[in-house]
Image 1 (spheres, rainbow, N blue to C red):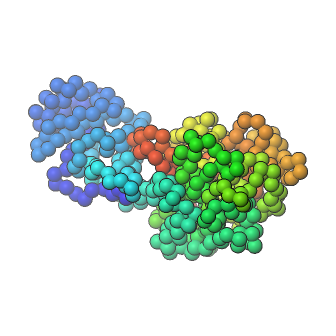
Image 2 (image 1 turned 120 degrees about the horizontal axis):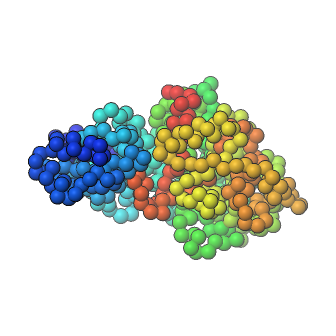
Image 3 (image 1 turned 45 degrees about the vertical axis):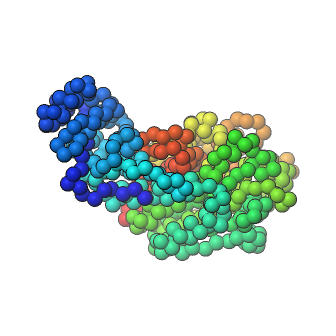
Length: 450
């Protein structure tokens, strides 16, 4: 976990510079540093960096882009090691500080990482809050980045239990054939072929009389595609197919750490979509928890199956807010790319809150339509539904419409996250990523308070 550095008398100043304040900043520097900046032709262009000699070390000038709140995060990878402090206030103070911490994340479980520059907590922010958010994101990233040989269903189950125990939440689990006796047939069908049992795990936190907020996460610890096996190129990062579970856990960690005034329930459906003699097959038909019969049109559309049972279970309690997270479709990436997860809801007011919080938190998402005319493409010929539609159109919308059949709560929102950064950007190192959790923390905090 990356924290702010303790106060350091020898910390190096980092100036946020624009063409408007350039002369003022240069005038405040010692003569040698100011002369060096002019030799480097530092003009305060957005993103421009100058490392100058300064009293007792160095002085850093960084061209501020007021439209890019996370831009300062790129300095973590380019500045010399040491401790830095903000010598003046950037336009987006808290976001800049958070970007630094998020950029400093490294997954070090299997390989040592170089020492990185550190940031002293800037004045004027809630440093504890920023560190809690960064720590929760790091928790989720660690889970996504861990390979499936070390994070199978047993290990993800244990990680959920550990988080619950840390916050004093009440944990429970239904595993293996108990899924059948307790009516979770789709979760059992998808996960029964793996060597580690499928399961549904959950925990509950907070005052039972408080507004009920429920998070549901897709926990497919590895996805071969089942008998409709993926090509090897498509399996390369399928350890991230539990990214929805990681997102739900990261958001839960944020909410529990802040003691938001809700009764929080977290439900994670955990399976490995593997191949063996007991694999579920194309053409099989299962009766879901909700009583809807589902024919399997493709075993690689397994995430929506386990979410169907989990969402139906969550919906029985009629929470005020029901959020699900899943690395569900490649179609979402085709439509919006890896950085911009789509979300789906029938609640226009809630959608507006999410959109506004997305911009404010630098946590981008985009609303997509639950286009009802497409729902008929999921109608089954010998079952109530198929888990896929014919043809290749509107895949992310079709998946959301499938899930919608299992939820009656109008306060439901589905997030089709990618959970992965293909390349490093400020605040977003390459590898596992937590998308939508920070914005939802803000939405829930605004709704219910602490």
